[in-house]
Amino acid sequence: MLRFLIALAVLTTASECGHPAVAGQAWRASEMNGDKPALGYELRRENGAVAGDAYILNPDFPHDFSHGRRAAMTVVEQSPREIVFRVRWSDDLKGTLRFRFKDADWPDAFQATVTEINGSEEYDSDTFNFTRTR
Image (cartoon, rainbow, N blue to C red; front, top):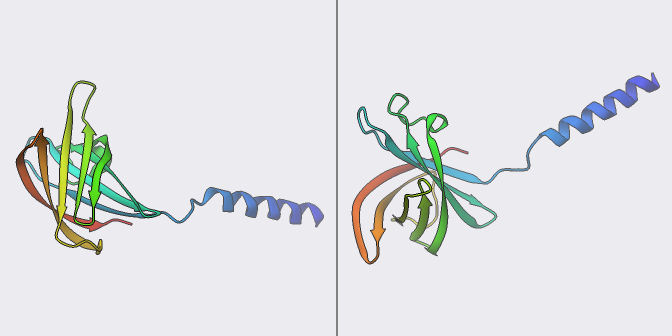
């Protein structure tokens, strides 16, 4: 009986260690680009900080981030309605993206206009519909 109780205690402790801490919030948005790769974005809020990743999505699996190639984004500037990220697509290709939000309170779903920035010029603006994923 004592062995059973010890084994039960060990299993309970091990199972509690396997559960992650309460995760932050995440929102995803992606586009369709026919038979060409498309872009997707994930924005996260954890402990008051914002982080994000950009994805090049496989056209055979539209909107499926698990089949995409991830590129980490680094926050450069941030205000309640705008975030500027640097993204490194590859060793040779880097970019700067500006996300502009209508709502600053991060609801379950929201729109953001994403614009590429090159120096002081902005181009290739698209509006993405973000939805909460967790």
